[in-house]
Length: 164
Image (cartoon, rainbow, N blue to C red; front, side):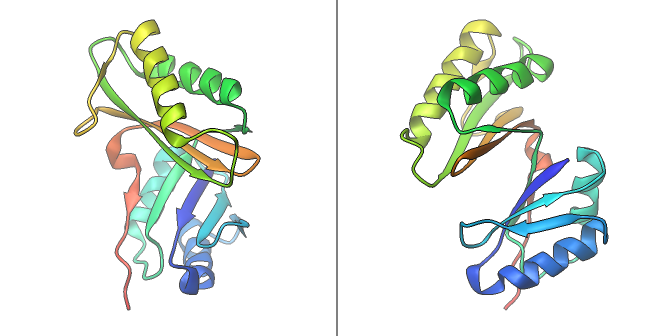
């Protein structure tokens, strides 16, 4: 399983240590070319990974997001994989929001991605958009030439407090 973590730029190396301590010494942790953005690969499922980071007291991590798929940064590929994951979890009775964070310049905007995927989910699944309190979040993390995708319950995105 992959996770994306964010931290203040000046605390990035502290965050990398905290991630190793939280996930264990077998975690593969690497910084990206984007300041304050760290990728983690661990041999555990999403639920266990979220629990590890929630239970570990951190001082240098803002947020940790599970990434269920990593694809090339191509709008069609992102849409296809997002829709595949959405079909597995989101039903017509559910609400959802698409959230895209774009780093780098892939040639399209975050809004383009959110509108395209949101429209496809509405059309193919019949779920309702709820931007304030969705039951599901389709999370798209564009990192230059690669993009991470997940369909998550809001509580699967771990927000942490930074200590001075």
